[in-house]
Image (spheres, helix red, strand yellow):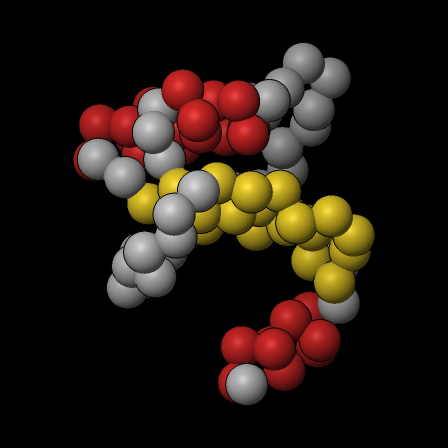
Length: 83
């Protein structure tokens, strides 16, 4: 669902699992991001959102939105950010 919505809203970025959480980075218009965030508060049918945080970061200028498959540990994710 996130992939389809991001494409419909012309957002770029990625979504990936880290430990037991989901990290989503999106870039696009302010309005489109607001719509996407609104959807993220409830997620797809059957999804349970226990907590939700938003952090603004510098753009990385992705050219598409993608789902990164697999689960990363927070340690391996932090290490990948340093390289």
